[in-house]
Image 1 (cartoon, rainbow, N blue to C red):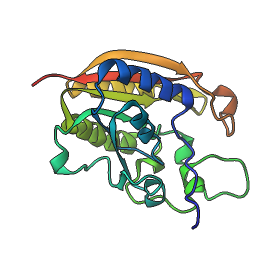
Image 2 (tube, rainbow, N blue to C red; image 1 turned 90 degrees about the horizontal axis):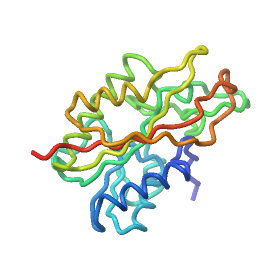
Image 3 (tube, one colour; image 1 turned 135 degrees about the horizontal axis):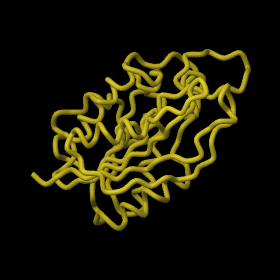
Image 4 (cartoon, helix red, strand yellow; image 1 turned 180 degrees about the horizontal axis):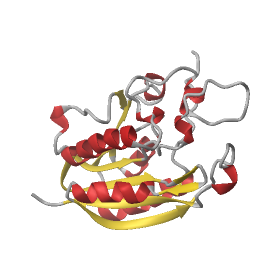
Amino acid sequence: MTPSPSHPAKYSATILAVIRATLETALPKGACILDPFAGTGRIHELRELGYVTVGVELEAEWACEHPDTVVGDATALPVAWSAGFDAVVTSPPYGNRMADNYAGDGSRRHTYRIALGRALTDGSAAGLQWGDRYRTTMRLALYEVRRVLKPGGLFILNISDHIRDGQLQNVPEWYEAECLALGLCRALRIDVPTPRNRHGANGALRAPAEAVFIFQKADE
């Protein structure tokens, strides 16, 4: 069997540790957790804590890495999933240069396109640079997060700012504002130092930490 292509942006061990600690204090065993940008399915490691996990991933090669990840679109989740999850835990594409549609010439670039070995599926957020199209797509995904959460459910979001043309792009602040506009209540923001990719034009200017937000959907 041909191995599936590696994913260039899996959860780091430090981010997963923060997620685990948060869930263990907030949710009972048996709670159902969704990752709508599941990649190769590290979300399923949370099963070790006694949780039920479901992953959604648009790229079939990555979705097939785990039997409980389905091929699907984070901006159009099944209607039947409305109010079906105790938590949504995800790390969407950051809108950084990993979205470059660059096919490669042997240089050490890290992009979704190169890792997958083919063009991304039409509509993939992984191929969108930070800008209007990216933000429009992610608004749809955040709306779906809110829809599939049970009242009182948690939304744990791992996201990072990045450097573009030498300037810091305040991506986490945008996500926070969008979640609050949807009526999600912010409980906490944790900034987690993580190893960063130092290749590329802005390699020496990487942001030092990633953000983990914990939001809660209001009881209805």
